[in-house]
Length: 362
Image (cartoon, rainbow, N blue to C red):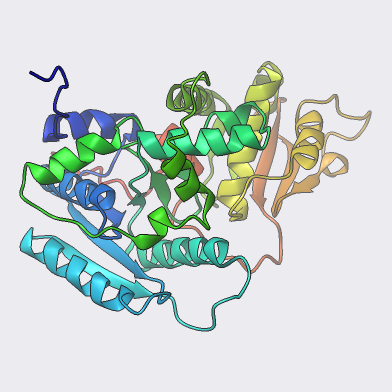
């Protein structure tokens, strides 16, 4: 008799708990889910569809066809058919144009996220879910450990990434792959295995073949989510969304924060308002944080203290109706970036800034 325990499927109640840390959502939430046709993303699509439906919202599955394999187009259509049979609307996004000879995997990843973000923006979808799970997280930490990454790198993938037009959510990070397979198995739904997942040319595939996991490393999801929750709570106290789309930062309040928290909040500000895909470089961020909390030069409580960071202008001004100073952060003049639907970084930590929320009486 075997002592092994069959993995449990992820049910609706479990998924609701996994989504709870990302609240608040709209009264009738609209989600986009990246679906490849594999077991992980199909499981996520089914669970997210049911989660949104119970809240009067809707979910759109976004299928990216990279056009890198002859079978890819047919697989995308097959996946769309599986979703349709489950009552889920889908949209196939195609990566067209020439493909690079070098760095193909990185280019494909960048193209995938660009297509997904554009699709969400065009449809006013503020939450993009991807199906990275606990096994993916362990592999990521193992790869970063091999490169001697710092503490943030060893914290693994973030559960929440805030872009100007959409929030990227990874609700399945605590869930092992076996439970996702069980979720589809319990519903009698098959999936498509991507050949690249076992291609030894790719580092992640080699790790899977070797059975390498991030043993002895910190709980990546717990470390990262703890940082995010702390930053979100602090943001409520020190940030104020303004009607012109800029953000005011209470200078005295930010001065009192630990240095690591000041760094995280400054990074959130510029990535959300500046529209960059990545946080600012560490050395530039360090200089900016020093200026945010430094003592103003004599006679320079205004424009003499202004500086820029990653596409954003920081201006030190006297707060209206007060003698206190505050930093006003806005995109640099002349920037050609698209106007965000919302300042996404503050949707999670400052609900009053989420202008899309339905506040009608219920």
